[in-house]
Amino acid sequence: MSRLFRVSCLLVLLVACAFSPAGAQTKQITLWLIGDAETGSYAQVFKQIEPALHAAFPDIDLDVHYVVAPNDRFLVALAAGIAPDIVTMSTGQAAQFIEAGLVVPIDYEVFGVRDSDDLKNLFYPGALASMYMYDDVFFMPTETTTFGMYYNIDLLQAHGLDEQHVPRTWDELIEIGKRFMREENGAVQQTGLALRRGWMWPSFRFAALIRQAGSDWRVNGRAAFNTPEALSAIEMYASLFHENKITAPTADNVWFQNGNAAFYLGPSYEMRTMEPMTSFDFGTAPYPVIDPANPVSTSYSYGMFVSSHSQNQKEAWEIVKFITDTEWAPVWYRTSALLIPRAGDWILDIVADQPKFMPFVLELEHARLEIAHPRYNEINGAIRDADNQIVARTASVANILEDLNQRVDVFLQEPLP
Figure (cartoon, rainbow, N blue to C red):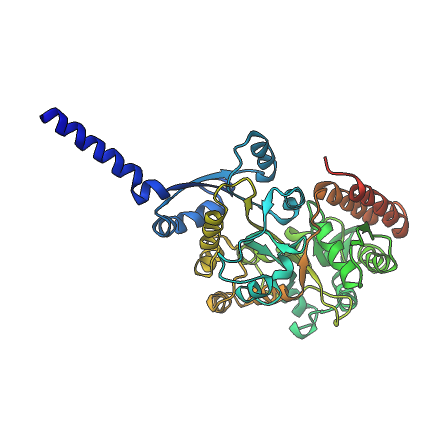
């Protein structure tokens, strides 16, 4: 009798566990974040969010991995059938997965809106222009980078200028920038302008300039680097190194930080690190424009995408919404200088502490998404080659752009692997 009682109790316990709410509803969501699990920016932010996240989703078993080059590993994981539910990657690298149907558009219902028009209200003005990909929204940003202009106040004052003389157009930048050029023994020691030229920096700049001139890098599905608008814009850019000479090929952010350049075109995330790196007073301003009536700059983002292979897409989007919500936006910025452009009064506290950050926030209204395409790496490599040729003056700008156009057009027309 005693043995029968024990067996009966065991059966009751097993049945209760099988049909309890926790047993029935627990789902595993795998999340890929970027960087080192201990020292990385994403790890530092996530450590602060994690307790609240687990409390908000007690029935979800969240499996978090920190991944280097997640876009490359995502392809391998998909092929192996072990893809994460949520993957964090850049807008440039995401295009290949969007076009192949391997990530899904956001679940508007989860975000409490009906469509993309309603979604605009959750972000600062213009921010969605940096998020649209293939006529929809496929990710929530963990960081959006805009570009602006840093300037050396001390250097301006040494040349009899004040902040009212900070240029707003490229023509003004050229005119003022010439005053700061200084050479010794045939070597440039100081420039009017500093800018980066490696990595993806040339493509960010080319896209902004061509759009400022009234065209785009791609028109009707074909490359458009050889249009009259593109030629005019890039010839002006070439003149910065040659005819108008206000910069030098090696004048970059370090050049500016060392006090050797009056102006520097740089990204928003450098705002947090610029002050400790400089020994002079600096200010910030909008990205220079060709025509004040058509202000355009470039932005790029890293964000969280949900895999189309996920068996729990709704829950995945709920996790994404929580991590990138307005409540945590100031945590992302104060911890890692990463801007989530979610609307809210939180930005007032940030700007109150760092008023120099304001131009980068306002630049969201004029920023348009970087060059994003499944052949992202090849296209950016071709632009980088063209930039090097322009600076080295190996041929005319027209010929260099014609060659660039042909190279990019091949990438645009070739079927994806």
